Amino acid sequence: MSVLQELLNELYGLEPDDDSILINEMAMSQKDAVFLLFSLGKPIGQHIIKLLKWDDPQNYAKHIHDIDENWLKKITYPEIELKAQKGTRPVSEEMYYDGLFEYSFETFDQFEKQMKALNKKYGKLPVMNSDEYVWNKLREIIENLSVDLHTGEFNSVVDYLYD
Image: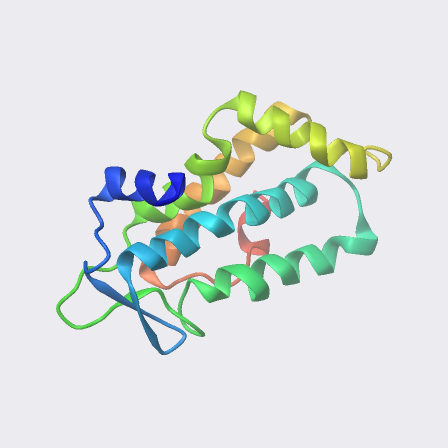
């Protein structure tokens, strides 16, 4: 069992035969669905960071597309909803938040480590916001996303980027 699977089991008590989730018209155990959610947290967060931190008009649309189409729409309504099958529980706001933020960005130290890696590639671009602002805004965005993913009201990450 992987460290992530052990964490999911500890946090949510999910066993392999627990509740099923419908994802892309295929039944998936809730444990597997939450595992998918946790595995997408880091790339989604990193792309949101890129949008908030650096002025990169050349890649702006690509980052939005990656977040919306390649990742978030895999786990939300209407295209492919992480939705509980009849008689099972849906993925909670807490699970969305834990998967998208807590696992990869729980502390500012974790965030700074990822910023160092991103700075190697993007550090020559004009900076739009401080690391502190980006970390706080990322947390706020994920909090709001978690609610909307849970209720099926997510449209685009653009809706969350600007005040």
